[in-house]
Length: 143
Ligand SMILES: [Cu+2]
Image 1 (cartoon, helix red, strand yellow):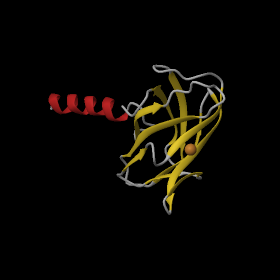
Image 2: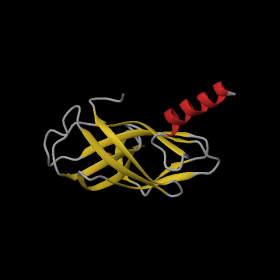
Image 3: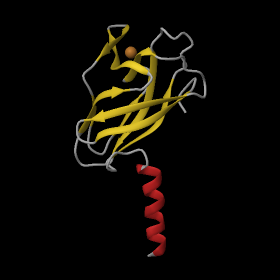
């Protein structure tokens, strides 16, 4: 019994430390460096929905950006286009990758440059799970 409780504690810490109410976990949060401050930033992460209900990411803010938009890349014929979308659906019991070439966040009006090793705070707001605060590490590529 002691071992079981121990395992649950470890599991709880590793899986739910970033989650709001322990229902969604956000992992591998990273963002690209921004060398020129007037250029937009881009941030990525993985969303895991541990619940039996669908959720969706509906808005994002950052203390370091005037505006954060949710974007997606889509192929139109042989052209890759980027467009803003209302939300990112997160089906029940599924993992959604917010990654280069797919869904991504774009940050406009950054208050400073983002160098490798810096941290970028983000507040992700989900329809059901509510606000989840995460810190993106500035990296050249996905961790
Ligand atoms: Cu974009």
